[in-house]
Image (cartoon, rainbow, N blue to C red; front, side, top):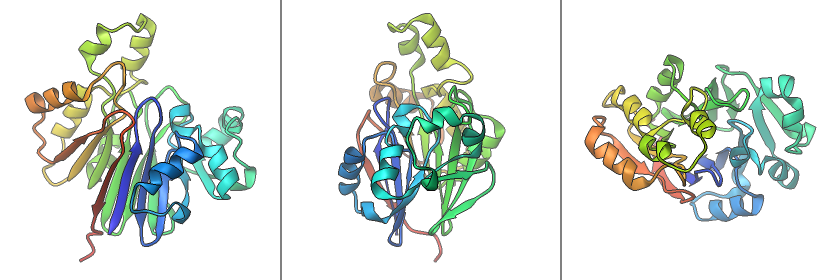
Length: 262
């Protein structure tokens, strides 16, 4: 059985764990090592079984814990090769020991234990940001957050997922009428910002009835969104009829899925 958890999502921190057969991976480390340990302890997974951490991008709410994680556990951190080649100074600020830093190329799968991982570019204002497709057995987990828009390539990867962690960052009226300065509203809603509730719903409405089987709406803004607003939008506009979970800011969610091999 594959076990997984949204360890937490939102501007305060983001991290996901997927585990199978006494192995596990983390996607993002937006919490301190102590907090990551605490949250993993609330799942059915063992922190010591984690093979390494795959980082989507360098914003602190996704990567702040990566360096300490590597230094304290001796386990590797996996980043887009372009970050090391073109943004080495920013990457160095995380303090990841060189011998524990691993790189991947987009669209080229790599293995961590039983996990086959493929990264693909997203559109965010953090250089060389990526989403991930993680295959275990016949199942696929998709992580698509922190992108201002979804292109056909992202759609193709996300539509393959059995379980999809999908960004629904802001409610447009709440953002528009909120206290943020104009430039910040433009950044959030721009082509390299975040996905709105409507963006996420429109994408799901373009998916088949078979996949994704289940979606976790993630990375809801504390200031520009509310689970109730997203629920109202889903009730009025969502045609896709899979299982959905709206992740409250900072809350943890656990689940399991068979490997589909039988």
